Image (tube, rainbow, N blue to C red; front, side, top):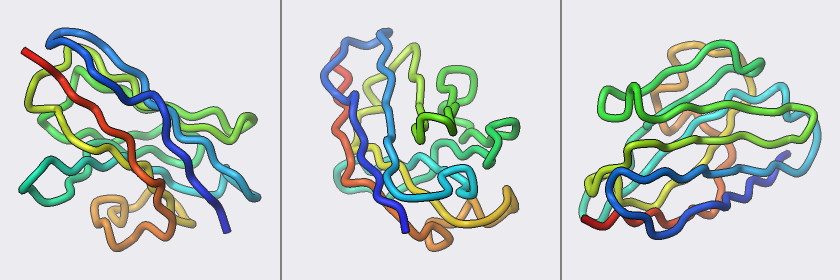
Length: 126
């Protein structure tokens, strides 16, 4: 069992940066594949990034590739999403999520994730 809490959202101008954090309580954080999702008003939830248990492998959606970087510090039970060159279309509620297991194609499906954070709002103004 793990509980996830996101932080770091806020209002930023286009072109700016934010770093989201996802702090996990519970045990065995290093056993979880982590994902970052976002949901904009009127749109479906979408995966933006995922990373393996060690952090050595990562996936990025085309829309954020080259601008977002995910990482994790297993010693601190924390995952991060660094977001650079933000665009107005990045405005959404961002969620971190976790599932037990390796970095397989399962990371693409929201249903694979067992645990979810409460979400943090990111608003990018023009």
